[in-house]
Image 1 (tube, rainbow, N blue to C red):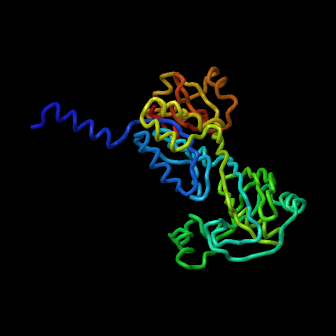
Image 2 (spheres, rainbow, N blue to C red):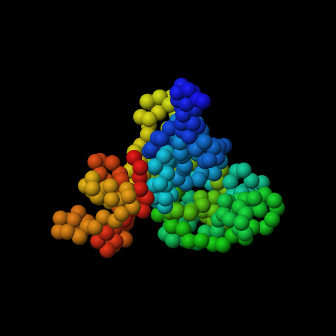
Length: 320
């Protein structure tokens, strides 16, 4: 029969194995050469968080903003991955690579080096909704397998063109004839490697991405980013949690709706909240049917909820 002390120790061990219930966002400055999932693993180890996930994969050769959601913040990840992203990248003219970045083998060469004037003219045709074929070395599924696995095995990879949105595409530097630096603001699903490849082809040459940095994943920016080293150095101390952004930091573009404690408890229990009285209509008059809101009570988010036909129904309850 276990003693009370033994039971307490067993409970403590189980708690440590499960992790600490930490809720919020850490914006990590991902280093070059590391996968996004490896970063998430190191963040969990450094903080002791029970649950973690990232909002938008960065290639191993890319650096920059990688928002990591902890605990209940993982329920808000789709609202970040669907937002705008900003990148700064260097395009190396004259060399096409099998992976469309510096990791691959040289696949083609060209002596053509476009002038700044020609580059800027070509960029005007690559803003807005454009068609883009993802790189062969990408994580897209083909017949149940990742495209990059097929490409590495030497199989021909045929990917379908998709529509992506480019909000801004600007030339910001030209350090020499072989390189040009660009900044891009784009929507979900955009491959910067494909953008660089297609720009080079449009200019009568070939090219690949030699350096890539993500500078924002709305609403998070590189000004908020911290290095893995700094996070690991403070570990589970209060300093680590001083870097933690609240769960609702990911929901800047989603309207907040204040609820009473009674209404909040109904949402938590999976029950709809009727908002049809005159007083209620003053709260929700600005909302369209089908709108997603962040339901708040006592200054804390209660749930992501949908307002429809006069009722508010929880989509994801936030247990904070």
